[in-house]
Amino acid sequence: MGRRSKDGNAVTHVDRTNDVTYHTFKGATCVRGATLERFWHDPKRSEGLEPNVHFFWVYTPTPDLVAIQCDGCVTQHKPSNTTQCTAFFPGRLSPMVDPSVLYWFKTKEPIKLRFTLEEVVYGPSVSGWLVRFDGPFVPQ
Image (cartoon, rainbow, N blue to C red; front, side, top):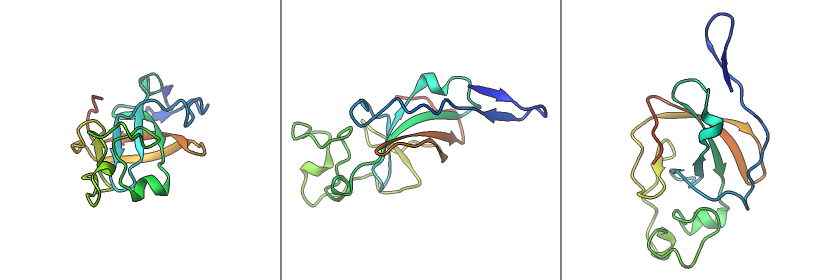
């Protein structure tokens, strides 16, 4: 997936096939603060990319999910998820508030790496993104 140009600089080439949909988005690795976008790491599509660049499928929650502060359900808000989702605590805001930070999905702790985003595969509710970190990223 990754290659080098004639001058030796890394060139990123990504399979732009969108094979993940709302219905097949089954996991979340991290969440972007404030937007509550769910990022699901795809190790196969990350192979061969530049160092510290990873491919993620990103689910953009509906405005209703953001309004109720649903931050612990993978896609649709689940009434059974009473221990993980902030939406079950009326009046409480998600601790994931900074849009310049990615937070671990399971613990809601900030990932201690800065990042930049590049959308490479567009989809109506799930898109593919390259995430460039400022250091080594090890998925939990």
